[in-house]
Amino acid sequence: MILVTGATGNIGSELVKLLVAKGLPVRVISRDEKKVSQLDPGVERVIGDRHDPSIVRKAAQGADKVFMLAMVFDATHQGDRVLVEAAKEAGAGQIVMISSASIQREGNAIGRLHREKEQLVESSGIPWTLLRPGGFMSNSILWWAESIKSQSKVFNPAGNGKTAPISPYDIAAVAAVALTSSGHEGKAYDLTGGELLSTPEQVEIISKVIGKPIECVDIPVDVAAERMIASGVPEALVKSLADLWAEIRKEGSTFQTNEVERLTGQPAQTFETWCREHRSAFV
Ligand SMILES: NC(=O)c1ccc[n+]([C@@H]2O[C@H](COP(=O)([O-])OP(=O)(O)OC[C@H]3O[C@@H](n4cnc5c(N)ncnc54)[C@H](OP(=O)(O)O)[C@@H]3O)[C@@H](O)[C@H]2O)c1
Image (cartoon, rainbow, N blue to C red):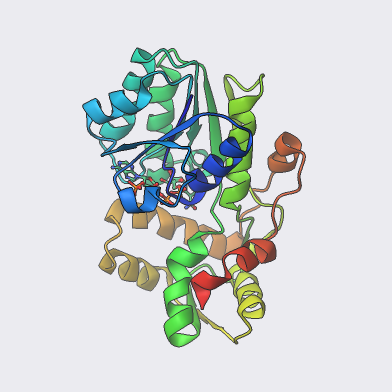
C-alpha cells in the first residue's frame, strides 16, 4: 500500500490517479472529507490532520511506501516529523518527498526550510528519493486567476525575466516512477518544465486559451510582497518569494532540466497544454 499525503492538492491528486491506474492500493490522509470524495472510490482514506500522531500512525499502518508533501507553512516541521516517525514505525520501505529547487539558493528561507525537511527524511533510515521542483504552473491560478477574472489584469513583479514553470502533473508522473520502479533510492531529482517563459509570455498564453485580452501590469517587488502579506501568506515565505522575483527580474532563471523526460519517457507538459486543462480556473 502506498500512503499519499497532499492527495487533494495539485501534485497529490494527479499522483493518486496515476497509482490507481496502475492498480496499486492507495491510502490518503486529508483534513477534508469533501475534497477526498473527489478521489477514486477505491482509495482508502484517513481523515485528520498531519500534525496529529494518532491519525498519521493510523494512516501509515501497513504502508510499504510513503509520498510526502513537505508542509512548507510549518516551520516547526512537526507535521513532517510525525509522518517520518510513523513511516518508520510502520516499516515503510521508501519515502518519496516533494522538496523544492529553492534549496539551491543560499540564504533563501523557503530553501532552508525544505532542506531541514529533507534532512529529517535523510536521517530517518528509510530509503528516500527527493524531488526538487522549481515554480509550479499552478501558481498562476493561485496568484493571477482572481485578477484575471475580476480585472483582466495580472500584476507582475518579475519583469521580463524567464523561468521554466513545471506542471504538477509532471511532478506526479516522476513521483509515480520513483515509487513504482527500482533505482531511485538515495537520489535527488531537480525538476523543471521544458520552456523558459517570462510572466508576460505566460499571461499571453492564458489570454489565448481563454480568448480574452489580459493586461500584464509591471509592479515593484515590494508592492507585490505587501499585497501577498495582506492576503495572509506568512511573511518569511513572502520575503523568500520577493528575493526570487527580484532575481528573476534582474536576470531570469537559467535553471532548467530535462529530468521529467529522462525519468518518465514523456516530454514535460507545455504551459499551453496545462492552461487548456485548467481553463475553467481562469474564467
Ligand atoms: N508552488 C510552487 O511553486 C512550489 C515549488 C517548489 C516546491 N513546492 C512544494 O510543493 C508543495 C505544494 O504542493 P501542491 O501544490 O501539490 O499542494 P497544494 O495543492 O497546496 O495542497 C496541499 C495539500 O496538503 C494537504 N495538507 C496541508 N496541510 C495539511 C495538514 N495539516 N494535514 C493534512 N494534510 C494537509 C492538503 O490536504 P487537505 O486540505 O485535503 O487536508 C492538500 O492536499 C509546497 O508545500 C512546497 O513544499 C511548491
